[in-house]
Image 1 (cartoon, rainbow, N blue to C red):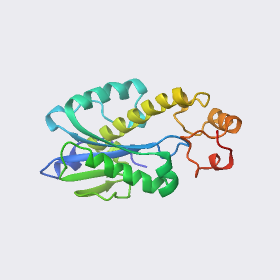
Image 2: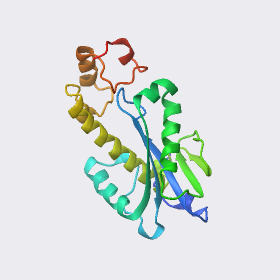
Image 3: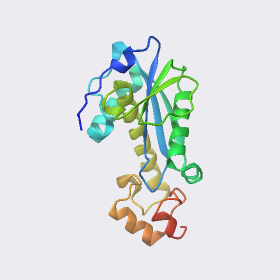
Length: 201
């Protein structure tokens, strides 16, 4: 599998504003899926942008601060109930659409991480591993990841005992043990196994 370094080549193919779109939270058993859309300012692109998974939490926080100061950002969220109703792919595409529509201005084109396009009122292109190939998508991956992590840390105060602040809803051994003991919380995805097999909190 070839390794990529994100650059601005996809964005330069369009004359008008281009946003990168990515999501965080497809795999967890609890919490929302969060999408972000980011329009970078070509003359003020923060250094160090990369796939959020390749960065430390501290690096992501620092980069988010720079993105917020130098780019346009839109956030879209699909809650657990929507995930259960529409399935995770459908909810992810809805969150991506919401993120693009939440931008201060509609871009001429959207670069979407992955291989499925959300329904958008602008031109769009999918990019496999877009978060490691496009700087705009990399920025969106950072915004989505940090935003979702903050939401799960806040959820830990509302639903203590599950460890949401540490595992962010992902199916770690500790999380599975807590679900087995406490049952599912209101933010657990009821359609996801093993959550679907346990009682309500």
